[in-house]
Length: 240
Image (cartoon, rainbow, N blue to C red; front, top):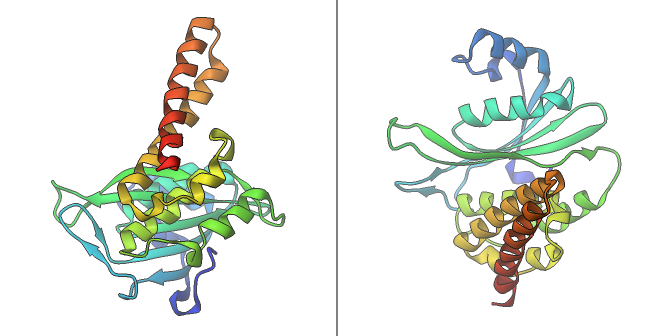
């Protein structure tokens, strides 16, 4: 899983019930219990080889890597959202069933209202990948978002940010024609550039979905215009 070095590996099997947040509604708890078959801690990045980040905005002292087997990946979005909302550490969750897998990430910040609380700014899943076939998405992940491929190890927060955003971009290869150039660019040295790339690709993906559903020519022209502006933003960043 993400080529994690041995020194960070920490295998531990959890009971399914221990992973279900206590404050969920009865129907949600039941759905979680029916969906999850196995939960395994794979690794924990917690020492200061990669420094922690603790400030008014973020508290990233640990990155947790989990393997969760589901009865079906149809429940991946529900399970991922529930766990990422309730778990305070930054988490990389591999969700899988008998044939396929995907990954869950969440960007979190410190709550300004609840003491020691967190606010999840977004949760996202990669697209589904076959477990036993080394497809293009897997090959690019190994090349660009595995542990040793991460460029920015300034803090655990930016480390997680780079790993998650690279994985998201790889999972949306067809959104931007210059994906590989983006992955090979210098934006990974700068937190703001990483976030800009993520938000831009996310907007482009949303617009492309809207374009497929648009019936009127005027709507298609408008959406294409917005897409061109976003493509221009990314192309300019690649030229920096």
